[in-house]
Image 1 (cartoon, rainbow over the protein chains, first blue to last red):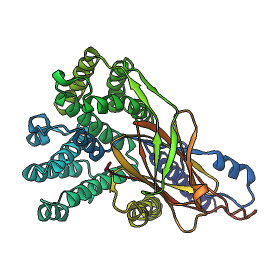
Image 2 (cartoon, chains in turn brown, yellow):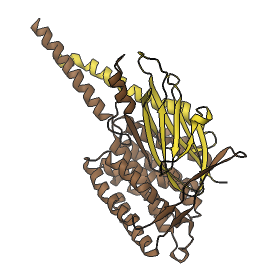
Image 3 (tube, one colour):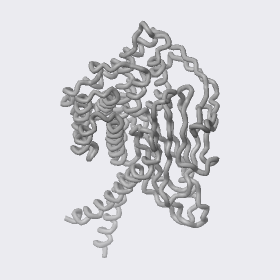
Image 4 (cartoon, one colour):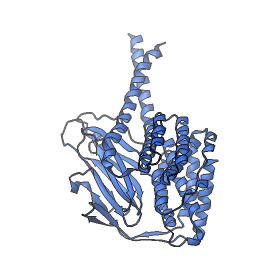
Length: 306
Length: 146
Protein backbone atom coordinates (compact mmCIF):
# COMPACT_ATOMS: atom_id res chain seq x y z
CA UNK A 1 0.00 0.00 0.00
CA UNK A 2 2.74 2.39 1.06
CA UNK A 3 4.79 1.43 -1.96
CA UNK A 4 1.84 2.10 -4.28
CA UNK A 5 1.16 5.37 -2.55
CA UNK A 6 4.79 6.42 -3.01
CA UNK A 7 4.64 5.55 -6.73
CA UNK A 8 1.39 7.54 -7.18
CA UNK A 9 2.77 10.53 -5.32
CA UNK A 10 5.97 10.41 -7.33
CA UNK A 11 4.00 10.17 -10.54
CA UNK A 12 1.81 13.13 -9.65
CA UNK A 13 4.85 15.16 -8.67
CA UNK A 14 6.69 14.41 -11.93
CA UNK A 15 3.61 15.21 -14.04
CA UNK A 16 3.06 18.41 -12.05
CA UNK A 17 6.69 19.49 -12.47
CA UNK A 18 6.57 18.71 -16.15
CA UNK A 19 3.40 20.76 -16.55
CA UNK A 20 5.05 23.68 -14.75
CA UNK A 21 8.09 23.45 -17.06
CA UNK A 22 5.82 23.37 -20.11
CA UNK A 23 3.89 26.40 -18.95
CA UNK A 24 7.13 28.27 -18.30
CA UNK A 25 8.49 27.38 -21.72
CA UNK A 26 5.40 28.59 -23.48
CA UNK A 27 5.41 32.22 -22.37
CA UNK A 28 5.88 33.80 -25.79
CA UNK A 29 8.46 36.50 -26.36
CA UNK A 30 5.93 38.87 -27.73
CA UNK A 31 3.34 38.03 -25.17
CA UNK A 32 3.04 38.80 -21.52
CA UNK A 33 4.76 36.11 -19.46
CA UNK A 34 1.65 35.53 -17.40
CA UNK A 35 0.09 33.60 -20.26
CA UNK A 36 -0.98 30.00 -19.79
CA UNK A 37 -2.19 28.56 -23.04
CA UNK A 38 -3.57 25.39 -21.53
CA UNK A 39 -5.59 27.03 -18.79
CA UNK A 40 -8.87 25.43 -17.79
CA UNK A 41 -11.42 27.24 -15.71
CA UNK A 42 -13.28 25.31 -13.05
CA UNK A 43 -17.04 25.68 -13.17
CA UNK A 44 -18.55 28.24 -10.80
CA UNK A 45 -15.13 29.52 -9.78
CA UNK A 46 -15.89 33.19 -10.19
CA UNK A 47 -12.66 34.44 -8.64
CA UNK A 48 -10.49 32.48 -11.05
CA UNK A 49 -12.66 33.53 -13.98
CA UNK A 50 -12.34 37.20 -13.00
CA UNK A 51 -8.54 36.81 -12.88
CA UNK A 52 -8.52 35.37 -16.36
CA UNK A 53 -10.83 38.11 -17.60
CA UNK A 54 -8.33 40.67 -16.40
CA UNK A 55 -5.32 38.81 -17.77
CA UNK A 56 -3.68 40.60 -20.63
CA UNK A 57 -1.63 39.40 -23.58
CA UNK A 58 0.69 41.91 -25.18
CA UNK A 59 1.95 41.56 -28.74
CA UNK A 60 4.80 43.84 -29.84
CA UNK A 61 4.68 43.88 -33.62
CA UNK A 62 7.78 45.10 -35.41
CA UNK A 63 7.69 45.64 -39.15
CA UNK A 64 8.47 42.27 -40.72
CA UNK A 65 11.54 41.99 -43.02
CA UNK A 66 9.14 41.99 -45.98
CA UNK A 67 7.46 45.20 -44.82
CA UNK A 68 10.85 46.85 -44.16
CA UNK A 69 12.01 46.04 -47.70
CA UNK A 70 8.72 47.29 -49.13
CA UNK A 71 9.15 50.60 -47.27
CA UNK A 72 12.62 51.07 -48.78
CA UNK A 73 11.34 50.41 -52.28
CA UNK A 74 8.30 52.65 -51.85
CA UNK A 75 10.64 55.51 -50.92
CA UNK A 76 12.16 55.24 -54.39
CA UNK A 77 15.50 53.81 -53.24
CA UNK A 78 17.80 52.07 -55.71
CA UNK A 79 18.97 48.47 -55.36
CA UNK A 80 22.54 48.03 -54.14
CA UNK A 81 23.71 44.44 -53.76
CA UNK A 82 26.88 45.49 -51.93
CA UNK A 83 24.80 46.55 -48.92
CA UNK A 84 23.36 43.08 -48.34
CA UNK A 85 24.94 40.55 -46.01
CA UNK A 86 26.95 38.18 -48.20
CA UNK A 87 25.42 34.72 -48.59
CA UNK A 88 28.93 33.26 -48.28
CA UNK A 89 28.95 34.32 -44.64
CA UNK A 90 26.21 31.86 -43.76
CA UNK A 91 28.63 29.22 -42.43
CA UNK A 92 30.03 31.69 -39.88
CA UNK A 93 26.80 31.70 -37.89
CA UNK A 94 26.91 28.87 -35.39
CA UNK A 95 25.47 30.32 -32.19
CA UNK A 96 21.71 30.62 -31.67
CA UNK A 97 22.09 34.40 -31.38
CA UNK A 98 24.00 34.86 -34.63
CA UNK A 99 21.73 32.42 -36.47
CA UNK A 100 18.56 34.13 -35.21
CA UNK A 101 19.76 37.64 -36.06
CA UNK A 102 20.99 36.59 -39.48
CA UNK A 103 17.82 34.67 -40.29
CA UNK A 104 16.07 38.04 -40.00
CA UNK A 105 18.85 39.78 -41.91
CA UNK A 106 18.84 37.28 -44.78
CA UNK A 107 15.03 37.36 -44.92
CA UNK A 108 15.15 41.15 -45.26
CA UNK A 109 17.84 40.85 -47.97
CA UNK A 110 15.75 38.19 -49.69
CA UNK A 111 12.71 40.49 -49.61
CA UNK A 112 14.80 43.38 -50.94
CA UNK A 113 16.13 41.23 -53.80
CA UNK A 114 12.58 39.98 -54.53
CA UNK A 115 11.11 43.45 -54.82
CA UNK A 116 13.86 44.44 -57.26
CA UNK A 117 13.49 41.20 -59.24
CA UNK A 118 17.08 40.04 -58.68
CA UNK A 119 16.38 36.45 -59.71
CA UNK A 120 19.69 34.75 -58.88
CA UNK A 121 19.98 36.60 -55.57
CA UNK A 122 16.45 35.53 -54.62
CA UNK A 123 17.46 31.87 -54.88
CA UNK A 124 20.80 32.45 -53.14
CA UNK A 125 19.23 34.28 -50.19
CA UNK A 126 16.41 31.75 -49.86
CA UNK A 127 19.03 28.98 -49.66
CA UNK A 128 20.98 30.97 -47.03
CA UNK A 129 17.78 31.49 -45.00
CA UNK A 130 16.98 27.77 -45.30
CA UNK A 131 20.44 26.82 -44.05
CA UNK A 132 20.02 29.01 -40.97
CA UNK A 133 16.44 27.87 -40.31
CA UNK A 134 17.70 24.27 -40.48
CA UNK A 135 20.56 25.20 -38.13
CA UNK A 136 18.05 26.56 -35.63
CA UNK A 137 16.09 23.33 -35.88
CA UNK A 138 13.05 25.02 -37.36
CA UNK A 139 11.23 22.11 -38.92
CA UNK A 140 9.53 22.62 -42.26
CA UNK A 141 10.09 26.41 -42.33
CA UNK A 142 11.72 26.23 -45.74
CA UNK A 143 11.41 22.90 -47.49
CA UNK A 144 13.01 21.90 -50.78
CA UNK A 145 9.55 22.15 -52.35
CA UNK A 146 9.52 25.84 -51.34
CA UNK A 147 12.81 26.43 -53.16
CA UNK A 148 11.45 24.57 -56.21
CA UNK A 149 8.27 26.69 -56.17
CA UNK A 150 10.41 29.79 -55.90
CA UNK A 151 12.47 28.77 -58.94
CA UNK A 152 9.32 27.98 -60.94
CA UNK A 153 7.90 31.44 -60.20
CA UNK A 154 11.14 33.37 -60.25
CA UNK A 155 9.70 36.10 -62.48
CA UNK A 156 6.46 36.47 -60.56
CA UNK A 157 7.11 39.02 -57.78
CA UNK A 158 3.68 38.50 -56.22
CA UNK A 159 4.19 34.75 -55.77
CA UNK A 160 7.72 35.30 -54.49
CA UNK A 161 6.46 37.74 -51.86
CA UNK A 162 3.85 35.19 -50.82
CA UNK A 163 6.56 32.55 -50.43
CA UNK A 164 8.80 34.91 -48.41
CA UNK A 165 5.88 35.85 -46.16
CA UNK A 166 4.92 32.19 -45.68
CA UNK A 167 8.43 31.03 -44.83
CA UNK A 168 8.91 33.85 -42.33
CA UNK A 169 5.60 33.00 -40.68
CA UNK A 170 6.59 29.33 -40.53
CA UNK A 171 9.83 30.24 -38.75
CA UNK A 172 8.37 32.71 -36.27
CA UNK A 173 5.35 30.55 -35.43
CA UNK A 174 7.58 27.50 -34.91
CA UNK A 175 9.88 29.43 -32.57
CA UNK A 176 7.01 30.95 -30.60
CA UNK A 177 5.06 27.71 -30.36
CA UNK A 178 8.12 25.75 -29.26
CA UNK A 179 9.09 27.92 -26.33
CA UNK A 180 11.83 29.92 -28.08
CA UNK A 181 10.52 33.50 -27.83
CA UNK A 182 14.02 34.97 -27.45
CA UNK A 183 15.12 33.43 -30.77
CA UNK A 184 11.88 34.63 -32.41
CA UNK A 185 12.47 38.16 -31.07
CA UNK A 186 16.10 38.21 -32.25
CA UNK A 187 15.01 37.16 -35.75
CA UNK A 188 12.64 40.13 -35.91
CA UNK A 189 15.33 42.44 -34.53
CA UNK A 190 17.82 41.27 -37.20
CA UNK A 191 15.34 42.00 -39.98
CA UNK A 192 14.45 45.41 -38.56
CA UNK A 193 18.13 46.45 -38.27
CA UNK A 194 18.90 45.27 -41.79
CA UNK A 195 16.09 47.38 -43.21
CA UNK A 196 17.27 50.39 -41.24
CA UNK A 197 20.90 49.79 -42.22
CA UNK A 198 20.12 49.56 -45.94
CA UNK A 199 17.95 52.71 -45.71
CA UNK A 200 20.61 54.80 -43.94
CA UNK A 201 23.27 53.69 -46.44
CA UNK A 202 21.11 54.64 -49.42
CA UNK A 203 20.48 58.25 -48.37
CA UNK A 204 22.21 60.75 -50.62
CA UNK A 205 23.31 63.60 -48.33
CA UNK A 206 23.15 66.02 -51.29
CA UNK A 207 19.42 65.39 -51.36
CA UNK A 208 18.80 65.23 -47.63
CA UNK A 209 15.96 67.73 -47.32
CA UNK A 210 12.62 66.36 -48.43
CA UNK A 211 14.12 62.91 -49.03
CA UNK A 212 11.36 60.30 -48.71
CA UNK A 213 13.81 57.69 -47.45
CA UNK A 214 14.87 60.02 -44.63
CA UNK A 215 11.19 60.25 -43.70
CA UNK A 216 10.97 56.45 -43.54
CA UNK A 217 14.06 56.37 -41.30
CA UNK A 218 12.52 58.93 -38.94
CA UNK A 219 9.39 56.75 -38.81
CA UNK A 220 11.48 53.97 -37.26
CA UNK A 221 11.68 56.05 -34.08
CA UNK A 222 8.02 55.04 -33.61
CA UNK A 223 9.10 51.38 -33.42
CA UNK A 224 12.08 51.66 -31.08
CA UNK A 225 10.01 51.30 -27.91
CA UNK A 226 8.14 48.34 -29.41
CA UNK A 227 11.51 46.79 -30.20
CA UNK A 228 12.71 47.29 -26.64
CA UNK A 229 9.49 45.89 -25.17
CA UNK A 230 9.84 42.82 -27.38
CA UNK A 231 13.39 42.24 -26.15
CA UNK A 232 12.62 43.01 -22.51
CA UNK A 233 10.06 40.18 -22.51
CA UNK A 234 13.10 37.84 -22.90
CA UNK A 235 15.35 39.78 -20.52
CA UNK A 236 17.75 37.58 -18.60
CA UNK A 237 18.86 35.72 -21.69
CA UNK A 238 22.51 36.88 -22.06
CA UNK A 239 22.23 37.20 -25.86
CA UNK A 240 19.10 39.32 -25.55
CA UNK A 241 20.63 41.45 -22.79
CA UNK A 242 23.53 42.35 -25.11
CA UNK A 243 21.11 43.43 -27.81
CA UNK A 244 19.05 45.46 -25.31
CA UNK A 245 22.22 47.44 -24.49
CA UNK A 246 22.84 48.08 -28.19
CA UNK A 247 19.24 49.10 -28.86
CA UNK A 248 19.31 51.41 -25.83
CA UNK A 249 22.31 53.16 -27.40
CA UNK A 250 20.36 53.58 -30.62
CA UNK A 251 17.33 54.89 -28.73
CA UNK A 252 19.48 57.69 -27.29
CA UNK A 253 20.17 58.86 -30.86
CA UNK A 254 16.54 58.45 -31.95
CA UNK A 255 15.50 60.53 -28.92
CA UNK A 256 17.29 63.49 -30.51
CA UNK A 257 14.64 63.49 -33.24
CA UNK A 258 11.42 65.28 -32.42
CA UNK A 259 8.16 64.07 -33.94
CA UNK A 260 5.02 66.16 -33.38
CA UNK A 261 1.73 64.74 -34.57
CA UNK A 262 -1.66 66.46 -34.67
CA UNK A 263 -4.70 64.51 -33.37
CA UNK A 264 -5.71 61.68 -35.70
CA UNK A 265 -9.06 62.13 -37.50
CA UNK A 266 -10.58 59.01 -39.08
CA UNK A 267 -12.47 59.68 -42.31
CA UNK A 268 -14.30 56.92 -44.13
CA UNK A 269 -13.95 56.82 -47.91
CA UNK A 270 -17.07 55.09 -49.26
CA UNK A 271 -15.62 54.70 -52.75
CA UNK A 272 -12.79 52.48 -51.57
CA UNK A 273 -14.43 51.20 -48.38
CA UNK A 274 -11.32 52.36 -46.55
CA UNK A 275 -10.81 54.56 -43.51
CA UNK A 276 -8.21 57.30 -43.94
CA UNK A 277 -6.47 58.28 -40.71
CA UNK A 278 -5.73 61.95 -41.22
CA UNK A 279 -3.08 63.78 -39.24
CA UNK A 280 -0.21 66.16 -39.82
CA UNK A 281 3.27 65.42 -38.60
CA UNK A 282 6.34 67.61 -38.05
CA UNK A 283 9.83 66.21 -37.62
CA UNK A 284 13.23 67.80 -37.10
CA UNK A 285 16.18 65.52 -37.85
CA UNK A 286 19.34 67.45 -38.69
CA UNK A 287 22.00 66.00 -41.03
CA UNK A 288 24.32 65.71 -38.01
CA UNK A 289 21.81 63.58 -36.09
CA UNK A 290 21.20 61.51 -39.21
CA UNK A 291 24.92 60.80 -39.57
CA UNK A 292 25.15 59.82 -35.90
CA UNK A 293 22.18 57.51 -36.42
CA UNK A 294 23.72 55.97 -39.56
CA UNK A 295 27.01 55.31 -37.74
CA UNK A 296 25.26 53.75 -34.71
CA UNK A 297 23.03 51.55 -36.89
CA UNK A 298 26.06 50.52 -38.98
CA UNK A 299 28.06 49.54 -35.90
CA UNK A 300 25.24 47.45 -34.46
CA UNK A 301 24.36 45.78 -37.76
CA UNK A 302 27.99 44.98 -38.47
CA UNK A 303 28.31 43.39 -35.02
CA UNK A 304 25.38 41.14 -36.01
CA UNK A 305 26.84 39.97 -39.33
CA UNK A 306 30.52 39.63 -38.37
CA UNK B 1 13.31 1.36 -14.36
CA UNK B 2 10.11 2.91 -13.02
CA UNK B 3 10.88 6.25 -14.60
CA UNK B 4 10.52 4.62 -18.03
CA UNK B 5 6.86 3.99 -17.24
CA UNK B 6 6.39 7.73 -16.99
CA UNK B 7 7.83 8.49 -20.40
CA UNK B 8 4.60 7.78 -22.36
CA UNK B 9 2.64 10.05 -19.97
CA UNK B 10 5.17 12.85 -20.29
CA UNK B 11 5.29 12.42 -24.05
CA UNK B 12 1.49 12.60 -24.24
CA UNK B 13 1.46 15.78 -22.17
CA UNK B 14 4.07 17.38 -24.41
CA UNK B 15 2.31 16.32 -27.61
CA UNK B 16 -1.04 17.63 -26.34
CA UNK B 17 0.51 21.01 -25.55
CA UNK B 18 2.32 21.34 -28.87
CA UNK B 19 -0.83 20.23 -30.67
CA UNK B 20 -2.79 23.19 -29.24
CA UNK B 21 -0.17 25.57 -30.66
CA UNK B 22 0.02 23.76 -33.98
CA UNK B 23 -3.76 23.99 -34.23
CA UNK B 24 -3.53 27.76 -33.69
CA UNK B 25 -0.97 28.08 -36.47
CA UNK B 26 -3.07 25.90 -38.79
CA UNK B 27 -6.15 27.96 -37.88
CA UNK B 28 -4.30 31.21 -38.59
CA UNK B 29 -3.15 29.95 -41.98
CA UNK B 30 -6.39 28.30 -43.08
CA UNK B 31 -8.98 30.69 -41.72
CA UNK B 32 -7.37 34.07 -41.12
CA UNK B 33 -4.89 34.36 -43.97
CA UNK B 34 -7.60 34.21 -46.70
CA UNK B 35 -9.32 37.17 -44.99
CA UNK B 36 -6.42 39.36 -46.16
CA UNK B 37 -7.65 38.95 -49.75
CA UNK B 38 -5.50 40.92 -52.21
CA UNK B 39 -3.28 42.34 -49.46
CA UNK B 40 0.18 40.82 -48.95
CA UNK B 41 0.56 39.21 -45.53
CA UNK B 42 3.51 40.83 -43.73
CA UNK B 43 4.69 37.41 -42.53
CA UNK B 44 4.33 38.11 -38.81
CA UNK B 45 2.52 35.59 -36.63
CA UNK B 46 0.33 36.72 -33.74
CA UNK B 47 -1.96 34.07 -32.29
CA UNK B 48 -2.90 32.79 -28.87
CA UNK B 49 -5.52 30.75 -27.10
CA UNK B 50 -7.93 33.14 -25.39
CA UNK B 51 -10.80 32.54 -23.01
CA UNK B 52 -14.22 34.23 -23.07
CA UNK B 53 -13.90 37.75 -21.70
CA UNK B 54 -10.11 37.84 -22.09
CA UNK B 55 -8.34 40.83 -23.66
CA UNK B 56 -5.14 41.21 -25.67
CA UNK B 57 -3.23 44.23 -26.92
CA UNK B 58 -0.97 44.75 -29.88
CA UNK B 59 1.33 47.69 -30.64
CA UNK B 60 2.48 48.37 -34.18
CA UNK B 61 3.75 51.21 -36.33
CA UNK B 62 1.86 51.81 -39.57
CA UNK B 63 3.35 53.77 -42.46
CA UNK B 64 1.92 56.47 -44.65
CA UNK B 65 2.92 54.80 -47.93
CA UNK B 66 0.87 51.68 -47.39
CA UNK B 67 -2.73 50.52 -47.56
CA UNK B 68 -3.43 48.13 -44.69
CA UNK B 69 -5.94 45.44 -43.81
CA UNK B 70 -6.12 43.97 -40.34
CA UNK B 71 -7.86 40.62 -39.95
CA UNK B 72 -8.83 39.27 -36.54
CA UNK B 73 -10.29 35.80 -36.42
CA UNK B 74 -11.49 33.59 -33.60
CA UNK B 75 -12.34 29.91 -33.71
CA UNK B 76 -16.01 29.07 -34.29
CA UNK B 77 -16.49 27.86 -30.72
CA UNK B 78 -15.72 31.38 -29.45
CA UNK B 79 -18.22 34.22 -29.26
CA UNK B 80 -17.63 37.39 -31.32
CA UNK B 81 -14.22 39.04 -31.14
CA UNK B 82 -14.45 42.76 -30.51
CA UNK B 83 -11.54 44.97 -31.52
CA UNK B 84 -10.69 48.64 -31.27
CA UNK B 85 -7.88 50.64 -32.85
CA UNK B 86 -6.52 53.53 -30.80
CA UNK B 87 -3.97 56.27 -31.38
CA UNK B 88 -1.19 57.16 -28.94
CA UNK B 89 -3.60 59.40 -27.01
CA UNK B 90 -5.99 56.45 -26.52
CA UNK B 91 -8.59 57.96 -28.85
CA UNK B 92 -10.64 55.19 -30.43
CA UNK B 93 -10.29 55.43 -34.21
CA UNK B 94 -12.29 52.34 -35.06
CA UNK B 95 -14.37 49.72 -33.31
CA UNK B 96 -15.69 46.67 -35.13
CA UNK B 97 -18.62 46.65 -32.70
CA UNK B 98 -20.08 49.38 -34.90
CA UNK B 99 -19.62 47.17 -37.95
CA UNK B 100 -21.37 44.03 -36.73
CA UNK B 101 -18.12 42.57 -35.37
CA UNK B 102 -16.50 42.59 -38.80
CA UNK B 103 -13.34 40.46 -38.97
CA UNK B 104 -11.43 42.93 -41.14
CA UNK B 105 -10.77 46.65 -41.35
CA UNK B 106 -9.10 48.47 -44.27
CA UNK B 107 -7.24 51.69 -43.59
CA UNK B 108 -4.45 54.00 -44.67
CA UNK B 109 -2.64 56.85 -42.99
CA UNK B 110 -1.80 60.39 -43.97
CA UNK B 111 1.26 60.21 -41.71
CA UNK B 112 2.96 57.24 -40.05
CA UNK B 113 1.63 56.40 -36.57
CA UNK B 114 2.10 53.92 -33.80
CA UNK B 115 -1.34 52.47 -33.10
CA UNK B 116 -2.67 50.19 -30.41
CA UNK B 117 -5.07 47.37 -31.15
CA UNK B 118 -7.17 46.06 -28.28
CA UNK B 119 -9.18 42.92 -28.78
CA UNK B 120 -11.60 41.22 -26.48
CA UNK B 121 -13.34 37.88 -26.69
CA UNK B 122 -16.94 38.74 -25.85
CA UNK B 123 -18.97 36.48 -23.59
CA UNK B 124 -21.81 34.02 -24.18
CA UNK B 125 -23.12 35.10 -20.76
CA UNK B 126 -23.92 31.57 -19.65
CA UNK B 127 -23.55 31.59 -15.89
CA UNK B 128 -22.13 28.42 -14.40
CA UNK B 129 -20.81 27.13 -17.70
CA UNK B 130 -17.11 26.62 -18.39
CA UNK B 131 -16.02 29.65 -20.43
CA UNK B 132 -15.20 28.83 -24.03
CA UNK B 133 -11.59 29.05 -25.13
CA UNK B 134 -10.00 28.93 -28.56
CA UNK B 135 -7.45 30.35 -30.95
CA UNK B 136 -7.51 34.01 -31.88
CA UNK B 137 -5.27 35.25 -34.66
CA UNK B 138 -4.29 38.77 -35.71
CA UNK B 139 -2.90 39.29 -39.20
CA UNK B 140 -1.81 42.33 -41.15
CA UNK B 141 -1.74 42.70 -44.89
CA UNK B 142 -0.38 45.61 -46.87
CA UNK B 143 -0.01 46.96 -50.36
CA UNK B 144 1.57 50.08 -51.73
CA UNK B 145 -0.78 53.03 -51.71
CA UNK B 146 -2.28 53.66 -55.14
